[in-house]
Image (cartoon, rainbow, N blue to C red; front, side):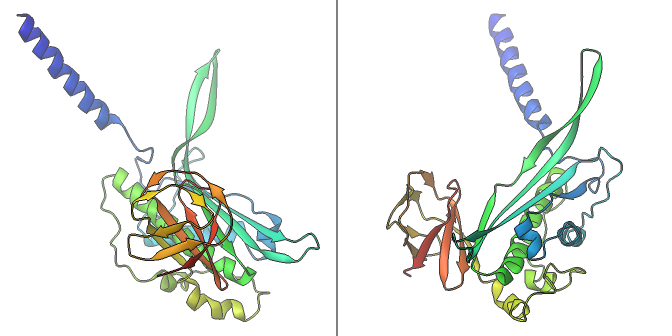
Length: 279
């Protein structure tokens, strides 16, 4: 009898474990897959100077999401928010000369939460899904727009795939045309009308400025002349002095071309580090 009871407890435990896993969500489950609002945070003065506005970024996001089959159509005031934060900072010398631009991008999904306490009802928001901060550096203002637009499309595609999967739909097809073709269809491109003609001419080459991959094996941080081998066979070496210990196995890396130089961002390390390609 004890054996039977023990078996029943084991079976109940396994069922409850599986059921709890089934009940766990990603935070992206929706009754209507389009029931969310796109929200862009106010941009810094440096960003506004080179043409970043709420309307422009919102227009890009909505057009990409519509192309992906999930147009933003919030039902009411408490619909979830897809929150887009793009922070642009112009680095300057003490004399005021420009050293280039550093851009941070962040996407997260916020849902409203209702709760009661002390006979009162409250409404707050909580982040249920997010992507890690993405760092970019650029030498000139006319590079910022295309580089940011390229990565914004990448992040919106990642969000689209996560939302589709969470709601029982297939992921986006891999071959859907280049991001360059898509960006040319924007109704409101985020290129300031005061830019020089070099801004538009740089658009065709800007998409090769961002390289993404993974480190082949262990990464133990930056030591001054660290050599990094990627899974695709490329080999890069650190060229600026910076020491930071961080262990990770096969972390994702992003390499950004800024003028004639390159900088590498390793997942888990906040700083982008100057590198050269050895192979």
